[in-house]
Length: 188
Image (cartoon, helix red, strand yellow):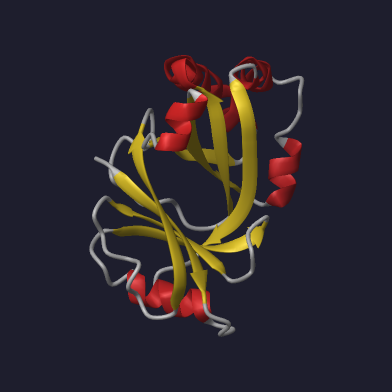
């Protein structure tokens, strides 16, 4: 299964994210609507939908950017992200030939990471390669992780854990990482 990840710019209405979520959750393919917390502009929203779901023509959207995503190790089914907590959307740009190793190291670290902290990896997705990726010999991946709260995210940075040791090896394959926090908008 493939997904589309939309980064949307909304109008200035105070309730724009809520109106968007109410509208989109009525669409069959929409898996999640996220509102910004840290690192995203206040007029943005993020949508995870099954590939081909029409989102861009929804009322209130001023601009839309779509990335086609293919799940790697997770999600293994089409379950939507679990409610509650915060989600960190971490975009990685890695060396183009390192995808398999990056995914392997991620899967190796997750059991320790999830056992130690109140967190759950929802998905690690490979973005469709574009011209910029080909020119730079790079690939992009999106890691979506649910944490109890921002405090749990901070505690999980502990460099002494087994998971963090594996993540340090994964870091050697990473050119850039950009982690931003958001909240999952509840359904109706």
